[in-house]
Image (tube, rainbow, N blue to C red; front, side, top):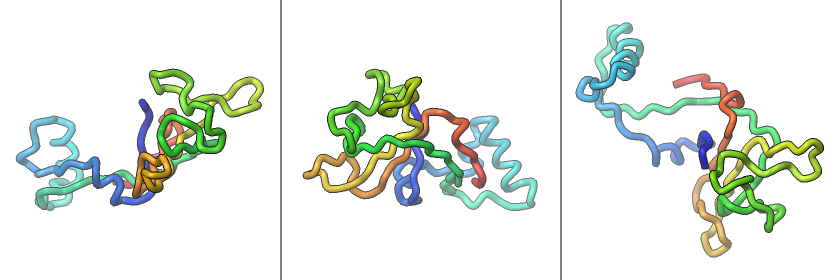
Length: 136
């Protein structure tokens, strides 16, 4: 999908992080500015091989639950997304006017039971206004 992926367990996000090696990686002006703010402005040296994560508050609203990323777990024949582009979640049943689900929760479980994720749930939000970054 095209949303922002979030997790409730740091070991999940660790799968997607790459190391900031410090001055060796200072090829990007934004990264240089982050190093200035986090380290140089406080008189600190970059420790090398740092992995960053944002701690966010997220408003999930009315989520749709899935185990395979394609079908609604509670209405198993209903698709999770409105189109194959996966930019918009399907509509909440009986909503009038039609309102799409606010977020997607991909549950985890055994692959033998049809789950795509075995260890950690994923939360996907398609509207960035639902995410408040609180800490780095």
